[in-house]
Length: 278
Image (cartoon, rainbow, N blue to C red):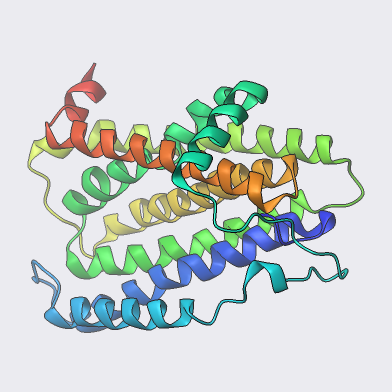
């Protein structure tokens, strides 16, 4: 959020999101390859977890190659504003000041809180009961690929220099509002006919009934990318200071994770099917 020049904030979010979701693509390809011929498999093989651990170790090693912020220069040659080694106390004080002086961060709370809430439904209520292992692996692969496409398209819009930043922000919000109702409206229609607690028979990708739910799951991924990338762009549009953006990002990810934790807890108590019937 703090490294890109003004006219490439959307593109940088897309680059981050594409790399971020490449892990999901690889993580889906492995179990898909292992289970492509195992129609009745009920769990993934040990190789899936071994590959995950290997990638985690490689990622940790790659982190040591990051350039210190003080040496980073944007493409136009400008420096990135940063603060060296802030303490926990100064971080919390700065967060308090930010929320007091910039009340719009509080107004963004609902968006941040909801930004990972839908993962619980997508993974536990939709994917797990409706598809067998190899079909879930295929769906997962398509889900993460659609994330990249969604991030690319919203990045193009948010960097469209023939429109003002305000116009791009408003158009992005309208698009997000519309696809929320379209995609999740389709999901609601599907869920009414396939409630999780009705003893569903998992579908296989060879079944004729698989195509529609597959595309629905793909567009869940597309929607997630639009939602998340738009949120990052909004934060990045507020300032170029890496110090302040660190506060913004911490607030965003903290609220996001709290919302996700609550969603999983509610799902664990079997409340979501009851709420859907209401």
